[in-house]
Figure 1 (cartoon, helix red, strand yellow):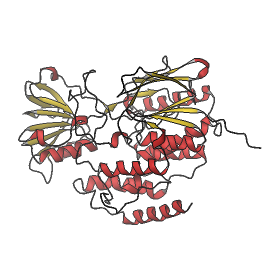
Figure 2 (cartoon, rainbow, N blue to C red; figure 1 turned 120 degrees about the horizontal axis):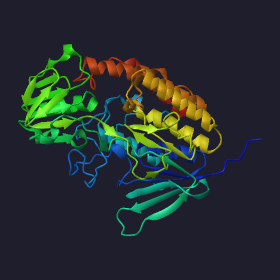
Figure 3 (cartoon, rainbow, N blue to C red; figure 1 turned 60 degrees about the vertical axis):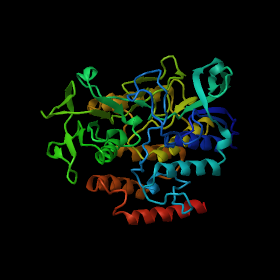
Figure 4 (cartoon, one colour; figure 1 turned 90 degrees about the vertical axis):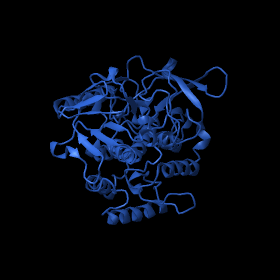
Amino acid sequence: MSTAITPLLVAVIGAGAAGLVTARELRREGHEVVVFERGNQIGGTWVYNPDVESDPLGLDPNRNVIHSSLYASLRTNLPRECMGFRDYPFRKRDEKGRDSRRFPSHREVLMYLQDFAADFGIGELVRLETEVVLVELGEGGKWRVKSRPLKSKNECVDEIYDAVVICNGHHVQPRNAHIPGINAWRGKQMHSHNYRTPKPFQDQVVVIIGGAASAADISREIATVAKEVHIADRSIKEDKLGKVPGHDNIWLHSKIESVHGSTVVFQDGKALSADFIVHCTGYKYDFPFLETKGAVTVDDNRVGPLYQHVFPPELAPWLSFVGLPWMVAPFPVFERQSKWIAGTLSNRIALPSKQKMTEDIQAFYSSLEASGTPKRYTHKMSDLQWDYDNWISDQCGLPAIEEWRVQMYNATSKNRVLRPESYRDEWDDADLALQAQQDFAQYLIH
């Protein structure tokens, strides 16, 4: 005889891709869901905002915080087949106003999320323009959630929930590079969070710090108007230093050693006079509303202790996080994490004991330390993501991640290195795209 599931009242913080799929999974399990969203529409980081913050480096705590980090020209760096949720594929739509390219614009991703929310009736669960001020453990193991409607002059709303799932994204609080001498720097600086178009860089000498996707895209775009673009990449191999092939005004350098006045000195001994430094150096996890009395902390960008990047042992399953892993195909990770959370809250899926979860976390942290992995890379997955996805799939009784999805992700990574300028429009994995379409047709039948 199956046990009846007791419906819980669950607060979900954030209505981006992670919050939307979490709301769907919780409701599928029969729970009652309220989604809190600070912005004026769903979509989270995929909502483009042409405005930038008053502090271009994002250091001033009193600045006007803009949630999105999108730049106007951004296109996905993964093909759409790879990106979508398993049972709601990111298929191309040929209607007017849609972008049918394999690597579409940010607007198309937002429209996909809007379609998802509409088709699953998630919009009715979302409180827009509502800021969560406090999440804390209340009496009897319940959670107190204090929120404030941004447009009303009313006082905060205080409510009690059975559980809270945090899906507030991690592309809002900039991490800036530490550079000796930067306080006396005479030029301008910004973090890529506040980059929108190349216009401010006309005829400038620009130094870009970073070696990831945003640094690659932004440096090429700025080079169309700037006098010179110099990329400082701490992980660059020596044989790649110097002028970038196919470009007259882009150079690759090692890490910045220091700055003096308007001069930038690199570790490889080169020095140059620059007008602008752009930090494409990632983001910090930030939960200013969360009060756990030390049960969850952020230390050098490690959110912990968390069992499998999701559950704090002290507070599981009543507090959980979706979307902390990075360098992943994000939507499939969100989908699996949220199914796991929803199933544990229904008592349908069992978590290990608090002690076992704690031991697992300690073993994980020890393995990172033994391999010399910095704390700030705790949630970086890369090639480990598939084992992680499959491990969670096992907990939930789901099929493993599709082989074509893994191969497509890897083929795109290789193609990005081979054709950095054109990988979004030239590729060699049409056979994998066909396999994906065949699978999608099956999913939609079921």
